[in-house]
Image 1 (cartoon, helix red, strand yellow):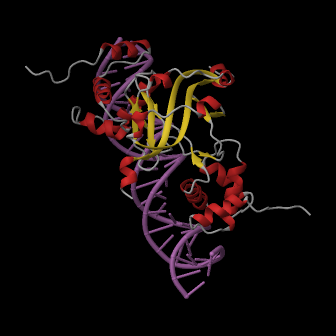
Image 2 (cartoon, helix red, strand yellow):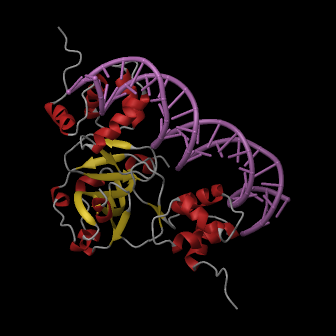
Image 3 (cartoon, chains in turn yellow, orange, red, purple):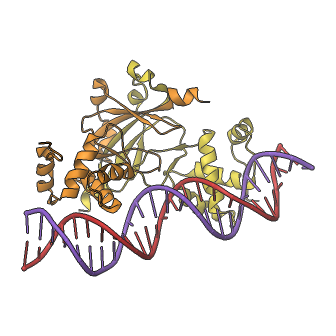
Length: 146
Length: 146
DNA sequence: ATAATTGCAAATTTTTTGCACTCCG
DNA sequence: CGGAGTGCAAAAAATTTGCAATTAT
């Protein structure tokens, strides 16, 4: 027998319980689909993927659920330049190379970047919970197609 | 006699000439206003400021002009999370502390951040033209108002 | 002269809000 | 049962596109 919709990881249930979010079939599917993503999907992309499983789920539910997940720290938002929101399912610390033409974000890991010190000066602004190095430039694909 | 609208800095004329952008009164005013900004204004904010000088300028002109300026490198876009675009008039290399609650961006300079090396691994993605460290957290104002 | 730019308007796209119905706890 | 969550719909906000009149080179 094939398992069609295995339950999400325990962390999902924990986080939801911690923050008083109810477990619904929609949320389970959205969680699975967004965590499965290798890219940085938009809400619309997640919506399209979830529809293959829950054919009558609404975009609003997906959109609001992704925002909820972001609030409780299950996923994150990644930086863009005023385009659509993009979600980051990967919780491991990592850094970004962003193409300024096509807006693709390439993830990479770098131990020394992870450990850059927070300047004292910044402490006055607030409490740093996240560090990321953003490198920008033109990706190889875009520099070819000219 | 009072100088009402002094000409923009020479770099403005140079950059425009370099990229074939024509010098128009609108562009001169938009340039002056955006460069004067101490914050990271939205197009709408720049529009409101330019209207005080050119009372009949349209939002579209401001919006498109800011995008043009971004393309030719007079100003930059700063990273956000899918909100409105925000423009960065400061050309000096600097880094950002972003409040994840109110989305305020605090600029800071840091020499060692400026000089972090680009990992070899990243070269395969494309050519890096810009480096920025983005620190995220909750700003002191937001952590008070709770 | 002529090609770029502007202003206006409309069309898209993205995000937010309201509300009745449903369902989880 | 009661409040949180969903789906539908509409509203609001932001961005993009088309075009005729204007203007810089």
